[in-house]
Length: 486
RNA sequence: GGUUCCGUGGCCGAGUGGCUAGGCAAUGGUCUGCAAAACCAUGUACAGCGGUUCGAAUCCGCUCGGAACCUCCA
Image (tube, rainbow, N blue to C red; front, top):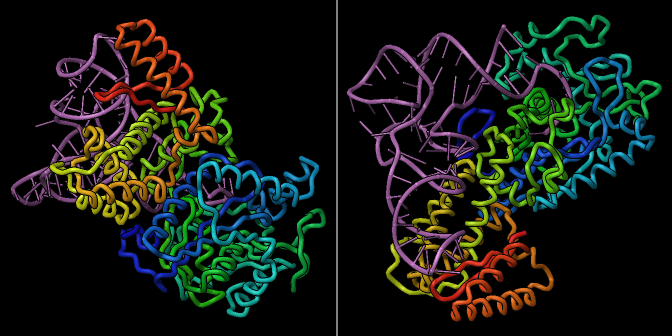
């Protein structure tokens, strides 16, 4: 089951060509550093991708890079954002693109997202975009004006339903538009450019049947999704803020250019807010990944590891708004550590019998959660159920060999494969981990000896000093264990 | 102004007609030399007001509050 934005309800999902599955996600415009809000969408769909793969689908995951074509505003003049940035930084537009594409990849890698199968760029598909424009014109749904080509929304709406995704009515849209662009070339304010004539100062430009220009923003996604996934494919995702007009226009272009509407399911990730307001490049209400990791911002009390932020995001449903705050992050961090230490403890438990815990039922409820529109928060609540069970056992799990093994693999699959979390404690000790663990073990033995001698001053010193370097000592019935925090 | 969505215990956050997630914090207890960790117990929360129903946090209406979109944004 997944929530389909197109129908506004949860629908049973079935793949068009199982086990193959096509997933398209709208990527970023690479004209500035990604912020956390951007990241959330990609992390959400990374989880979707991971779970679909886990279920056995052979997913082709396509996520574009928009490296051309954005206009600053709706007016007919205006620079595209990349060109503007290039002018400000005195660089080639493609240097800007390269720079921020690298930044984007770097940041997403920190969040442990899996790269898409194909990551096409808009500028790499100019030819295909021109082809689609020709088809749309042939279908009679676009017109040329002074070297630009516009999509005729009213005409399209005669036989189709423009607004079906965003729930808008064409009449309402018309009455809602401001009538100030008297000299506009468009026949109607609702029409949108699919090809734009380049002004003399415009740097990024390509030849076309209509003269030198550049493609309209909405077009690239229609072109690249259908090129790599087919005229009909399974899932299209993106941020909620792209629903209108971007995705609405995509549907119209698809239908006009190919005769099909493209994706069968639309999924929209919701916004990450900061102080209750959407993070947005244009308003400056943002938090950068760098600030999150380092804590070097007045918006956070300290820095957080990317996997903590990821865990925090996974504790909310992808379709809900989520507000970012220091307190919420710290709560997530503690929860994360509890879950992870239970995972580590599980590795040392032996099989046995008599436990009041049905691994089978528990496992089924994990899948049930994820099958219900990727409900990661409910999944996590199930993971904590398992954690409580594990923490309540000493030495013997009370589970049969099979059940114990099933518990381990299921936990592993969901924590690491599906949610994409990383094991910080292990990663932190890095290359020399074995040596480090041996050294700590020696210290713990010394401390045990000191305790046996009732030399508590010494034993407490060892404990406190280990704590000072981030190693927490946990006394148990059969000796002490420890965990390393980053 | 129009469209859509949301308002859940101290905080975060699921659920969406009866069986009332989870995390963090808090309180009590077990354990401990003391702590920490862990475990056990404890919260009758669903913005307000009406209505439908045997029964509503969940459906309907109104009011209040917040957000997103309607211009580029994930």
